[in-house]
Image (cartoon, rainbow, N blue to C red; front, top):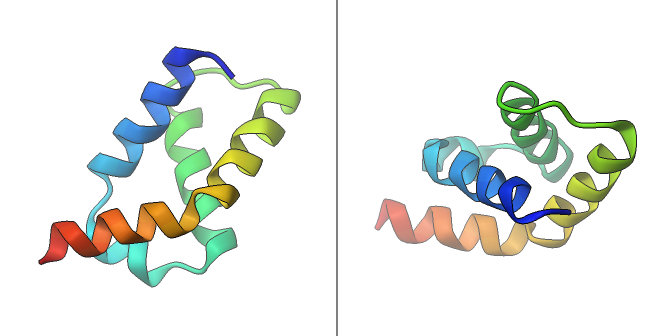
Length: 71
């Protein structure tokens, strides 16, 4: 995964309302963020798999950040 994709991922996370990030199940959260990325850049099937795995591994961090933003 390249740096620009990582930036897009974290920008999508920051631009998503906290209540959405907290309300969605893990698969729904990953799919939502993938949808946001697909709207901004073309992702090949291999890159979708890499991004999906990355998001699954960062779900706790994403939710912690969302909780912090709500406080």
